[in-house]
Image: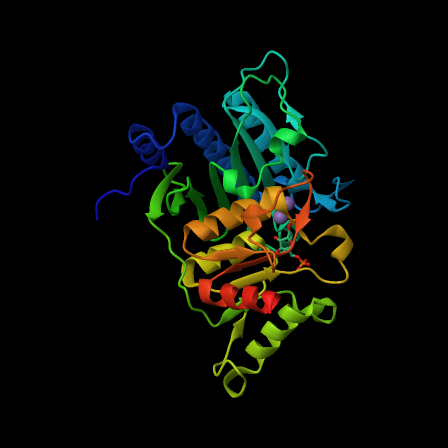
Length: 333
Ligand code: AHG
Ligand code: MN
Ligand code: MN
């Protein structure tokens, strides 16, 4: 078997073909470096005392884990020092992060969920990092919240890294989806999953069933029909998974198909949903669409949603095309 392509080689090729510029290549190398550090710390866990809560809350009122804070600091510092971004925004920071005055600015904005699925850290289940890249406004020293509020269709790139049995980086720059596995012996991400596509059909769904009594009618109908199995209107049996780490669910769906849902329900209606548009829903939706799947709020395509605020939440239904199309249809009947 010939040696797998390294991420840095892959990026250099993309630059030569004119698909990305040098600034973007620099940014992606910084993101990879940050995620390698996070991977190492998630992996060491309590050997270096990193499990457990930090006794603080983020802007959304969620208790932060020690690793939420450490991952956020590392990701933020590495990108800020790299010189390829003009500003940053994270699930774990109240406001837009502007670089210190003396630091070099780059041509991009990056939003991120530094550690997704952090309720799973202490039980040693897969967690991950999710990121989205936008163009920075021209000639602005300190971009503000408004500069970030672009629909997902304007993302230049999106990706995630899963810290599971392997550390895998999945990336789209708007021309398909590729996956890279971290080779711990050499410290490099290597192209192991070129051109990922989501099977259009599936008999597997993922939803937190404990919220069933709060769902809206179209989601209840869809799940009830799946649960009815062979004897029901779908005429076949369905299988269910729920990891409670969106990165792990999306990675499973990219690998073998499926549907993932965190829909609106009456318990979270006022908040607009559970998952965050800028850090979770938009990047995952770009990846899923680039892999041939679909990603919707219910009645709308997620990446068409015009964001109103940085920490906005949104309902998410994504995965294999045929099933998500069916759920879309149920919302429009
Ligand atoms: P985070 O750890 O970044 O706050 O995100 C957790 C999210 C998502 O990854 C997962 O699908 C969902 O929350 C799980 O929610 P429940 O605990 O309600 O099942
Ligand atoms: Mn998350
Ligand atoms: Mn998180």
